[in-house]
Image (tube, rainbow, N blue to C red; front, top):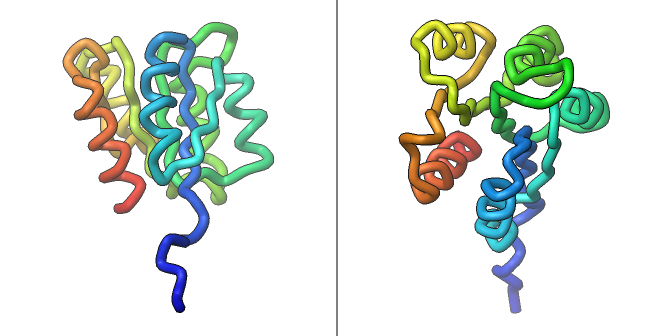
Length: 132
């Protein structure tokens, strides 16, 4: 008898976000799905984690506490051959065209404005990007 319940290792999603409520809601949704959810609360923590791992997808807020914002994380990832091709989703409250363009130039595959997105649309985009 063949075991069809094993689908292989879970995809790793690194989410760089300091909004605790949003993190709790999304992590609960992702915990029961096919993703390993890794959270970084700021840019420094994200860069530290990225030194030791290569996630399948990175979701990043642009406004983060500390000295390293989301733009800096995207920039560092774009310079690292291990990380430059990883799909990156920006989920931020910044909505100016200049911010969106800067994020895209730094490798963001998708830019989502938090205030305009439903939980389901965020989860749908995560699934779409990670399977891309």
